[in-house]
Image 1 (spheres, rainbow, N blue to C red):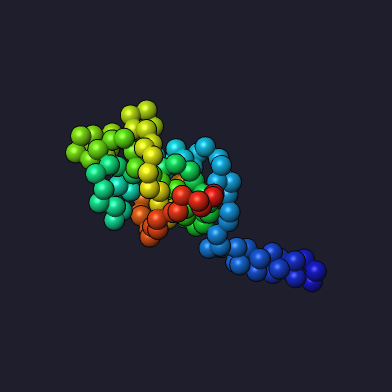
Image 2: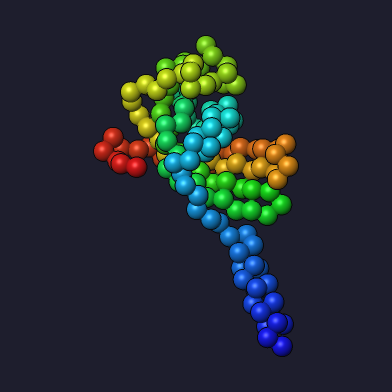
Length: 137
């Protein structure tokens, strides 16, 4: 009887965790690498219509949800780069080619969907807001 009760409790706890979001260390360099991979999609999907491409500065938060793959939800601080749109293709943006320019900053939500096999990833851009120069992260 005790074994049956324990199994029920364990399954109930797992059902609660299924679909839950978990925090991950946003300072892990893996996250910034992932965001750089999706920078083309980000620049195409953001509502930023400036002359320069936006590039990631810092991953402020990272959460994930696992079920038949992983869904990452990032809050990313971005800023304008030294790379003007039209001069460099968005797919060629990299940390080496485009450095951060002084100026405005924005905080965007970026979603990344990955499968467990590692052969699929899809980036989506969520809402963004401008960030005051005095705001600290």
